Image 1: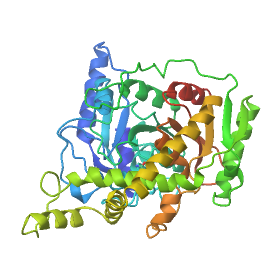
Image 2: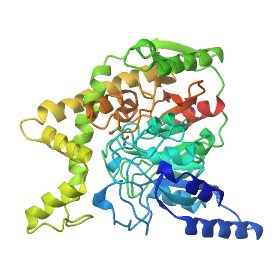
Image 3: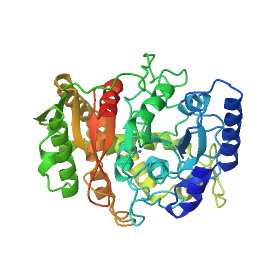
Image 4: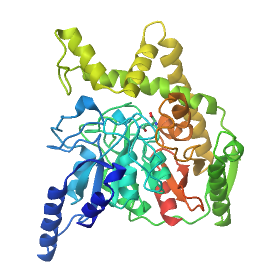
Length: 445
Ligand code: GLN
């Protein structure tokens, strides 16, 4: 009831696409009674969760923030969500997001922008903007989001929260609406890293429905000892003095480094040769994958069908033109272009090779050091509407988050205490499958 009241009080922030009030209350009541009768409760009994509008929950709408799927009802439940439900998590609603998770400000949603609770004139980040504000505004305890290139860490840092994406493959993608399949991962946002550790240990692990989720043992992330022993943490000097980074963020990064040094850790400046190539590589590859993934929305099999169409070709073109928003259409065009014959080798093929170079260099750093420290975003939350006409500016701001997704590495955004009114965070990245070590460290901070 408390959380549902909060949702009512914060309607103006446009956090939820759908609120499951009655069901959530019924489930909470059922759990209360079961507990009174001494029943064994799940690990998440009483934990109120929001899910991003890209996660399938059987019998509930799921639209990916798109007109294309406005009336679509999920026929099954995502594996990760099912595992949380099996431990008695209570889903309170589905949160607003950028259309098909494409964006960094939650301004590309069919349902309008979500607003940052710290300053409602500003964006909450994206694409999991609703997820972030759902926790920030106290409407739930934990939010399930998704990250293709930063959509969990960036909104978490814009809203003063912890945001975590695991190693690619750690959590099944079954039931997560696809954007860029070789990048997509489910992640969590919360005020406490401990909550994230618990959600991860429950939802991670192999799944017969996702061949990219390998059969690797899942540690009890929430139970392991926190790490306070000295760690070696690499950082990039240019992130402390680049003019492209907001001074408040440079200051926050410098403060994070100082605080960690003061706590006895070794902070080591390292270099990275590919900063100029990170964003282009990400946008060539993800738009290519998106153009393929989104070809299933053809007006025939799924979702929106234009009432104006008179033959098959018109059904395709009109349904897609009317069903998809501007940013999604831009990316489908871009992705189709880079995959087209004659351009494939020059763009897609080359970007695959650069992805490997980026990955190998990050791997090289992580062979020597425990973690890599970086800003999350070069910008503070911007005023709603300011960047909608400048997609390139939006893309460039993804530079520090897309690296982990390009390399498939686990990474976490950590809030920094600031004197300004806008939240700021920094980021730590770890080696593949070392989310346990990363979370043990962050839980000990
Ligand atoms: N901002 C990035 C993009 O628009 C990342 C989005 C995401 O992680 N879903 O692609």
